[in-house]
Image (cartoon, rainbow, N blue to C red; front, side, top):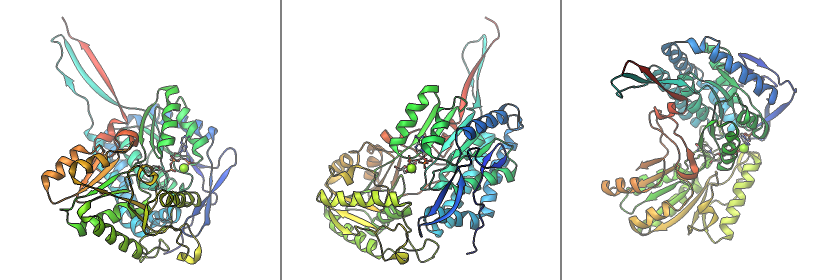
Length: 489
Ligand code: NAP
Ligand code: MG
């Protein structure tokens, strides 16, 4: 793979221009596979937030963006999808460097999916509209759909480009202006998205990118009176803070938060498929997946067999340099995240769960450099244990036994979260009944972790509210105005 040239420091994107921070501050971004600094990035502060909000407002009210036809807007969003496909190699290399995810996953799965998101919403721009309502004979009543305005999109580090596309594409299709704040661990691909936006012809101020700390840059966006809506993906804890802070200016907020999703395997399932699904359900992207099937619920009759097969696969999983095609799992995102995952493993042990595979740092990988954690399977987990309740956000699976449908559903729902769930069975009736009974925004039957731009995704309970993807996502970026014209009495 050829080396990717990146500016040092990488500038911010404000009002159609690449700028250094007014404060002159920069921060480093690190490759988690070798612990080396990739480059420095300009750190946005309050001055940049304010400038970006003003530019976004100008774009909406004075610039060409607010006057553009839906078709033209849709074409620009579509073209972003085209550019992503043309630049797959570069974007995937950058994403893999910044996150530690395998190049296969960036290049073959996530960047193409991001392109598909832009294509989907490019097509959606021309399908928006209000309704004509039948009310009084003397009235002509209808609704208008209008862009909500300036959107702050705050995203995490696990799928930096993909999760940004989940917000940026529908927001642009709806006619909003977006200020994108990437996670501090992974600012690079968001800057690439900003560049692509400029290059396809988005007017100045329509898509701006402000890397910087959540506690300052993120908070400034959440508090700024000129921001109309915050679209957030991240931890439940930060989600709560954002909700509280956004109350000051009564901003619209949507939250995609954490999860502790149950993957339920019934004894009548195709067990090989279930084992495979449970395996990728937890180990895809090193377990740094909000919808990870981190609680494996297995019916008693097949529990031992399923866990044994999973443990065997986990022990054979090839960790290594994410660019190596033979690598199946890369390092977790940071030293801090690794410490947190290892702490959870320790707590699991202490509380009496039994290690079936893994259980520590993988020090033999990549000459000891990088934040590699062994794919870990805990057996004999009981629902009260910390590792069955809290989101670990790493390659750690908690296997729990159950007896029959009722017990499965009760255990599946014994969580404050409700992002996703999996059901494995050959019995169609059981599959649909369990899908209804489980409180989660997505239920996969005989598969796990599949997404489509058309299918809404989001949480029940403390996994957040609002839906991304599908036509539902557009709702978050539109206001509804009712118009009443008096015709006579
Ligand atoms: P995080 O700490 O919540 O950060 C997410 C984003 O919010 C980052 O850009 C972060 O900036 C920013 N941020 C932090 N504090 C902020 C504040 N006070 N005001 C405004 N913005 C703030 O989460 P993370 O550690 O990056 O990601 C892991 C967590 O995200 C996991 O718990 C996972 O469940 C959740 N997640 C959920 C989904 C979903 O779709 N539901 C998807 C992915 C991840 P900094 O990077 O500078 O801190
Ligand atoms: Mg963070």
